[in-house]
Image (tube, rainbow, N blue to C red; front, side, top):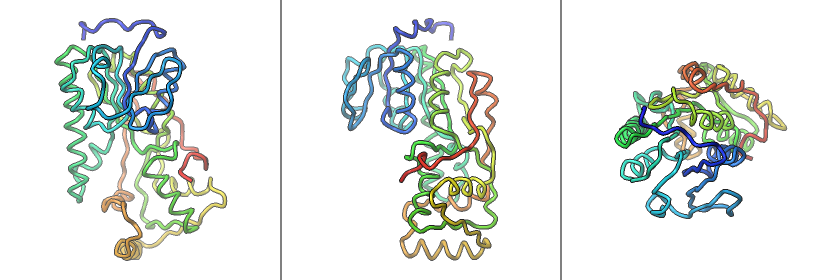
Length: 297
């Protein structure tokens, strides 16, 4: 990547940002502004503009042509597939691209549910599309792949568990829900993107971003429920009994939106290595210490 120009001084840098109102994006946006970046951000329902911040209403198709001319960095914190298609056809002059994907590209590629397999394939194709487009225009792309995200109250994992537990006063798990997890806080993901933009060794590479602690599913849920007030009860049922109860709940329409493979994966280890990201840009995520304010109310 010798053709990539040196990055300008932080106070001179301009970013084009997608997904800036999302969980990761909001945290990253605050970091960029605090570091002196100027930012143009696209959103369907943007907040007011601020110092060095301009919001643009709409979707990728609505992005003004003037914003597609030049930027020092592009940050994509929203859907990777939509961004990849836009970036592949855009003519923007930008030496650096940081895009968020997901470790679901690996954990769901062999899922029993065809929709989950399709998601995994779409994530892999989208990542490849970003790298191909970046290489074609002499830019450097980095793909960041988080594990189980929490911390903003807008995730679809632990916040969903908290919502169910608060509503009923309890949460039920199969006794064999011992698959290992590495929940990662949104602030650590934002910090990773901010650090990676200046990491030359991260050019053209993808990194898994797990959290700083590996724990089994049951412990993760128990620790999450314990931070609530009052703490909901956690019931453990034998696997066959839990599966029967789950089938009944699905039939009654009480678990709409819960993917069929979600329960099966509670029993599987979904663990990734943070060492490559640590070596490339100093990634050092926090251990899992949940607080009630981190989850949807």
